[in-house]
Length: 68
Image 1: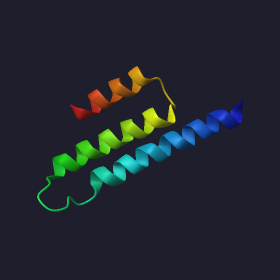
Image 2 (image 1 turned 45 degrees about the vertical axis):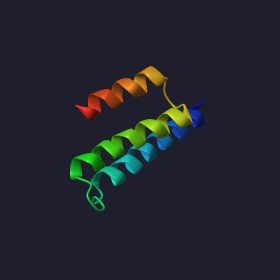
Image 3 (image 1 turned 180 degrees about the horizontal axis):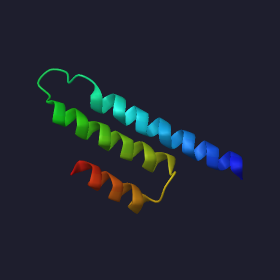
Image 4 (image 1 turned 90 degrees about the horizontal axis):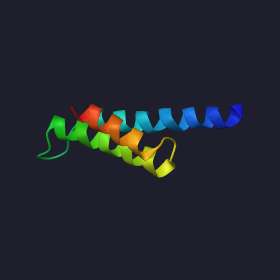
């Protein structure tokens, strides 16, 4: 039981770190800083949905809150 919780937390932190890396990276070409932040939030939500670590409505709610 503990191993499953640790795996869930590690994967969650990894998804968030990937999103942060994308969101804080320098925008290529004509993109703005805001567009990179939104891409980071979107990619974090997509990764969390693919890995099914949390229920989909919860991930969607957190993504909507982060977009504001």
